[in-house]
Image 1: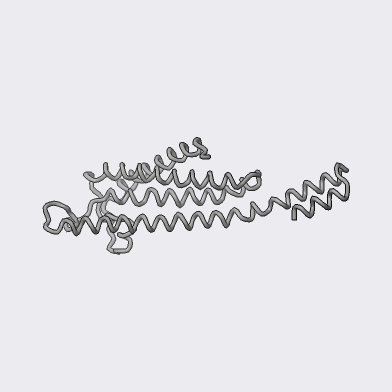
Image 2: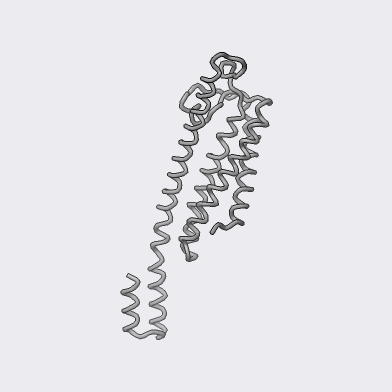
Length: 200
Protein backbone atom coordinates (compact mmCIF):
# COMPACT_ATOMS: atom_id res chain seq x y z
CA UNK A 1 0.00 0.00 0.00
CA UNK A 2 1.33 3.42 -0.92
CA UNK A 3 2.35 5.85 1.78
CA UNK A 4 0.42 8.88 0.52
CA UNK A 5 2.26 11.25 2.83
CA UNK A 6 5.54 10.27 1.14
CA UNK A 7 3.88 10.55 -2.29
CA UNK A 8 2.56 14.07 -1.64
CA UNK A 9 5.83 15.27 -0.09
CA UNK A 10 7.82 13.83 -3.00
CA UNK A 11 5.57 15.39 -5.62
CA UNK A 12 5.71 18.80 -3.94
CA UNK A 13 9.47 18.70 -3.36
CA UNK A 14 10.46 17.52 -6.83
CA UNK A 15 8.06 19.89 -8.57
CA UNK A 16 9.38 22.85 -6.58
CA UNK A 17 13.03 21.92 -7.20
CA UNK A 18 12.35 21.32 -10.89
CA UNK A 19 10.53 24.66 -11.20
CA UNK A 20 13.39 26.56 -9.54
CA UNK A 21 15.99 24.85 -11.75
CA UNK A 22 14.02 25.76 -14.86
CA UNK A 23 14.00 29.42 -13.80
CA UNK A 24 17.73 29.18 -13.06
CA UNK A 25 18.44 27.85 -16.55
CA UNK A 26 16.43 30.69 -18.02
CA UNK A 27 18.41 33.33 -16.11
CA UNK A 28 21.89 31.82 -16.28
CA UNK A 29 22.01 30.25 -19.74
CA UNK A 30 20.07 32.46 -22.17
CA UNK A 31 22.26 31.66 -25.19
CA UNK A 32 23.72 28.22 -24.49
CA UNK A 33 24.61 26.33 -27.67
CA UNK A 34 25.89 22.88 -28.49
CA UNK A 35 26.16 20.96 -31.75
CA UNK A 36 26.28 17.33 -30.53
CA UNK A 37 23.29 15.52 -32.03
CA UNK A 38 23.50 12.81 -29.37
CA UNK A 39 22.99 15.36 -26.60
CA UNK A 40 20.09 16.80 -28.56
CA UNK A 41 18.54 13.33 -28.63
CA UNK A 42 18.72 13.17 -24.84
CA UNK A 43 17.92 16.85 -24.25
CA UNK A 44 15.70 18.02 -27.13
CA UNK A 45 15.67 21.70 -27.95
CA UNK A 46 18.91 22.53 -26.16
CA UNK A 47 19.89 25.51 -28.33
CA UNK A 48 18.50 28.96 -27.61
CA UNK A 49 16.19 30.07 -24.85
CA UNK A 50 13.36 32.44 -25.67
CA UNK A 51 10.77 34.15 -23.51
CA UNK A 52 8.02 32.90 -25.81
CA UNK A 53 8.75 29.25 -25.09
CA UNK A 54 9.63 29.72 -21.41
CA UNK A 55 6.06 29.42 -20.08
CA UNK A 56 5.61 26.12 -21.91
CA UNK A 57 8.94 25.01 -20.47
CA UNK A 58 7.75 25.80 -16.94
CA UNK A 59 4.61 23.73 -17.50
CA UNK A 60 6.65 20.82 -18.83
CA UNK A 61 9.07 21.19 -15.93
CA UNK A 62 6.21 20.96 -13.43
CA UNK A 63 4.98 17.76 -15.11
CA UNK A 64 8.46 16.24 -15.11
CA UNK A 65 8.91 17.23 -11.48
CA UNK A 66 5.71 15.39 -10.63
CA UNK A 67 7.01 12.38 -12.58
CA UNK A 68 10.30 12.47 -10.66
CA UNK A 69 8.44 12.64 -7.36
CA UNK A 70 6.25 9.69 -8.33
CA UNK A 71 9.33 7.62 -9.23
CA UNK A 72 11.04 8.42 -5.93
CA UNK A 73 7.93 7.77 -3.82
CA UNK A 74 7.43 4.40 -5.54
CA UNK A 75 11.06 3.46 -4.83
CA UNK A 76 10.73 4.64 -1.22
CA UNK A 77 7.60 2.55 -0.65
CA UNK A 78 9.14 -0.53 -2.28
CA UNK A 79 12.25 -0.48 -0.12
CA UNK A 80 10.38 0.56 3.04
CA UNK A 81 8.24 -2.59 2.73
CA UNK A 82 11.38 -4.72 2.45
CA UNK A 83 13.17 -3.02 5.34
CA UNK A 84 11.32 -4.01 8.51
CA UNK A 85 14.03 -3.10 10.99
CA UNK A 86 15.54 0.24 11.95
CA UNK A 87 19.00 -0.86 10.79
CA UNK A 88 17.72 -1.64 7.31
CA UNK A 89 15.86 1.68 7.19
CA UNK A 90 19.08 3.49 8.12
CA UNK A 91 20.87 1.67 5.30
CA UNK A 92 18.20 3.01 2.92
CA UNK A 93 19.17 6.65 3.46
CA UNK A 94 22.37 6.81 1.33
CA UNK A 95 20.65 5.06 -1.55
CA UNK A 96 17.57 7.26 -1.19
CA UNK A 97 19.79 10.36 -1.26
CA UNK A 98 21.36 9.13 -4.51
CA UNK A 99 17.91 8.51 -5.98
CA UNK A 100 16.83 12.02 -4.95
CA UNK A 101 19.81 13.71 -6.61
CA UNK A 102 19.78 11.67 -9.83
CA UNK A 103 16.02 11.74 -10.25
CA UNK A 104 15.90 15.51 -9.73
CA UNK A 105 18.48 15.87 -12.49
CA UNK A 106 16.53 13.52 -14.74
CA UNK A 107 13.23 15.23 -14.00
CA UNK A 108 14.34 18.84 -14.24
CA UNK A 109 17.14 19.08 -16.79
CA UNK A 110 15.21 17.77 -19.78
CA UNK A 111 12.11 20.00 -19.42
CA UNK A 112 14.24 23.02 -18.61
CA UNK A 113 16.05 22.73 -21.90
CA UNK A 114 12.78 21.96 -23.69
CA UNK A 115 11.89 25.56 -22.85
CA UNK A 116 14.55 26.67 -25.32
CA UNK A 117 13.54 27.63 -28.82
CA UNK A 118 14.96 25.85 -31.85
CA UNK A 119 16.55 27.82 -34.69
CA UNK A 120 14.64 28.74 -37.85
CA UNK A 121 15.22 25.45 -39.66
CA UNK A 122 13.43 23.64 -36.83
CA UNK A 123 10.37 25.90 -37.04
CA UNK A 124 6.95 24.50 -37.87
CA UNK A 125 5.31 27.30 -39.84
CA UNK A 126 3.96 26.37 -43.28
CA UNK A 127 7.04 24.41 -44.30
CA UNK A 128 6.16 21.79 -46.97
CA UNK A 129 8.05 19.14 -44.99
CA UNK A 130 6.43 19.91 -41.62
CA UNK A 131 5.64 16.22 -41.08
CA UNK A 132 9.38 15.39 -41.13
CA UNK A 133 9.98 17.82 -38.26
CA UNK A 134 7.03 16.34 -36.39
CA UNK A 135 8.34 12.78 -36.79
CA UNK A 136 11.85 13.87 -35.75
CA UNK A 137 10.47 15.58 -32.63
CA UNK A 138 8.50 12.47 -31.65
CA UNK A 139 11.59 10.32 -32.24
CA UNK A 140 13.70 12.59 -30.05
CA UNK A 141 11.08 12.46 -27.30
CA UNK A 142 11.01 8.65 -27.43
CA UNK A 143 14.81 8.51 -27.30
CA UNK A 144 14.81 10.81 -24.30
CA UNK A 145 12.21 8.69 -22.48
CA UNK A 146 14.20 5.54 -23.27
CA UNK A 147 17.38 7.15 -21.94
CA UNK A 148 15.78 8.22 -18.65
CA UNK A 149 13.99 4.87 -18.32
CA UNK A 150 17.34 3.09 -18.52
CA UNK A 151 18.84 5.61 -16.09
CA UNK A 152 16.06 5.06 -13.52
CA UNK A 153 16.40 1.27 -13.93
CA UNK A 154 20.12 1.56 -13.22
CA UNK A 155 19.38 3.65 -10.13
CA UNK A 156 16.90 1.06 -8.84
CA UNK A 157 19.40 -1.77 -9.31
CA UNK A 158 22.14 0.29 -7.65
CA UNK A 159 19.97 1.07 -4.63
CA UNK A 160 19.06 -2.62 -4.31
CA UNK A 161 22.76 -3.49 -4.21
CA UNK A 162 23.34 -0.78 -1.60
CA UNK A 163 20.51 -2.14 0.52
CA UNK A 164 21.63 -5.76 0.38
CA UNK A 165 24.30 -5.52 3.13
CA UNK A 166 21.85 -3.78 5.46
CA UNK A 167 19.16 -6.39 4.92
CA UNK A 168 21.57 -9.29 5.21
CA UNK A 169 22.92 -7.95 8.51
CA UNK A 170 19.60 -8.59 10.25
CA UNK A 171 20.39 -12.21 11.24
CA UNK A 172 23.52 -10.95 13.02
CA UNK A 173 21.33 -8.60 15.08
CA UNK A 174 18.97 -11.48 15.86
CA UNK A 175 21.91 -13.66 16.92
CA UNK A 176 23.14 -10.91 19.20
CA UNK A 177 19.72 -10.65 20.86
CA UNK A 178 19.64 -14.44 21.20
CA UNK A 179 23.08 -14.42 22.88
CA UNK A 180 21.96 -11.70 25.28
CA UNK A 181 18.85 -13.68 26.24
CA UNK A 182 20.99 -16.76 26.81
CA UNK A 183 23.46 -14.75 28.90
CA UNK A 184 20.62 -13.42 31.07
CA UNK A 185 19.34 -16.95 31.60
CA UNK A 186 16.02 -16.39 29.85
CA UNK A 187 16.53 -19.50 27.67
CA UNK A 188 18.42 -22.75 28.25
CA UNK A 189 21.25 -24.17 26.13
CA UNK A 190 19.01 -26.46 24.07
CA UNK A 191 16.68 -23.63 23.08
CA UNK A 192 19.67 -21.39 22.37
CA UNK A 193 21.25 -23.93 20.01
CA UNK A 194 17.92 -24.70 18.31
CA UNK A 195 17.15 -21.04 17.61
CA UNK A 196 20.72 -20.41 16.55
CA UNK A 197 20.39 -23.15 13.92
CA UNK A 198 17.09 -21.66 12.74
CA UNK A 199 18.65 -18.24 12.27
CA UNK A 200 21.46 -19.68 10.16
